[in-house]
Image (cartoon, rainbow, N blue to C red; front, side):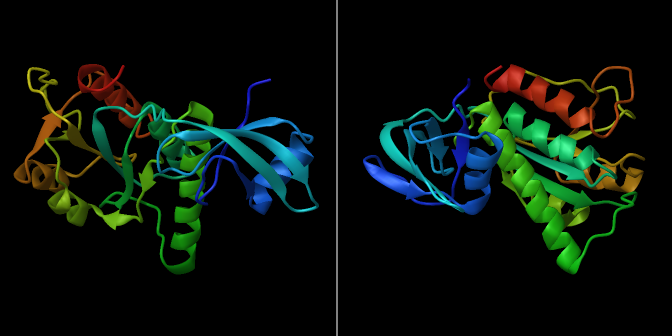
Length: 241
């Protein structure tokens, strides 16, 4: 069986015993039915991972003895900040999960002109917490030891004007511009619209703020497909694919 990887926000160090939080403790002892002595890998998003084993199991908590540290982050040399308009149903969950797996560094959900989802107050905080946990679970699964940052949703205009990167792209099908791979870059910002696409005003605002128009082939991609195709391409050209 594959050794489980568990995220914890605690400080970690070798030759110490860690008391895991209730949620991962329940998953290990009640769902996976692990016993004392089972091997685990812990990481806290600060770099590297800690190997150890379960030393004891209580009703609500599992204790893990950490034995050695491995400095392996599996981070791409390309920093990718994805700005993605909030979509309906589980599409947004899918995008955050897969963008994390593909190596996105930051993800900001955006309110655009054609965004149909309304979030504020307690509902917004609950949704943000949900998205952050999806990204953490994706890091556990894909062996990332540094978390992708899932930011609180923003207005698209504010995100566009505040974005800073070596190269910025706005994806839409009303252009024939392709990716120019001749430059060497370390960071990029990627803007993706909702189901109905970005408005012409939003596209123009992005281009006025040094976003390069980008088309991915002749077909119109869905809002949950476009960011994954674009991130894959960026990682192939400037990252670690």
